Image 1 (cartoon, rainbow, N blue to C red):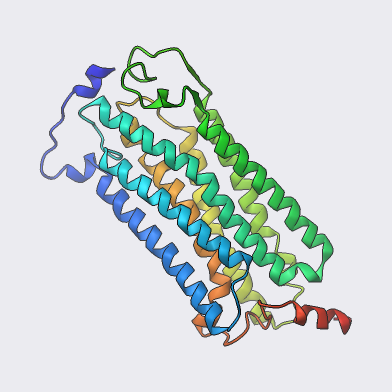
Image 2 (image 1 turned 180 degrees about the vertical axis):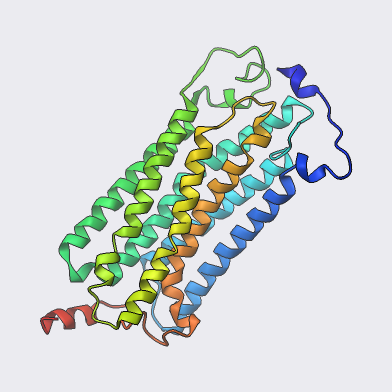
Length: 313
């Protein structure tokens, strides 16, 4: 193992991009975190324009962005230590990257649950007074999301025991002479969590559609709102792609820095895209589609909904 890691490879001047995905990973990570930051900033500006105080979904979007920055930091260190390199020159780089990937994996469910709860609270703020069944559906999906996040976090943190066996050079899992310890089937665990996450993402997208088309507003507004929520399909697509790549994960340290680069960037893309999707509906006043309301519904209050119900509409 160590010998295969020590084999050097000197690509030609035109082969640099083919042997190192690091620059592309860095550019992609910066683009994603910048877009997520921009979305949250515009969300808060829109709330200020509407002259309403921040709600629970706004606070959760900020929390999600904070954890996304923590993931971004771990991505930077992964790239620094060789993530995306086709033929690393030593095993130490691979093990150091494993340490930062471990941190990123642990942060993923935390970032994701903050994003999903932000979306659920937004749904509750807009729709829940229309239909108690819908409100209960929100609670059920929220509970499932929370259960997924808790199980994902602790399963990731304690995937091996002792924990540092993943990146320890002396007696570690990939040292050639592992000390006493054991790990769960990491690929099966990550794939299972990814599949459940994809299903929950799909439920989160489908959930508000009947409510949208029952709104007392124009068909044009319904179509616009449906389109904005449907942009969450990008998040689902990232989740599906990540599930597929995770199922094909390579644990050999001589190749995983290269092979796992796409799965790692998708793991970062998914929460960042989720943050953007969570912010888009609230940003509509900034898009010139409405001045003080979102689809003619005051998001800061449920008085419009109560008045509709009082009129039997």
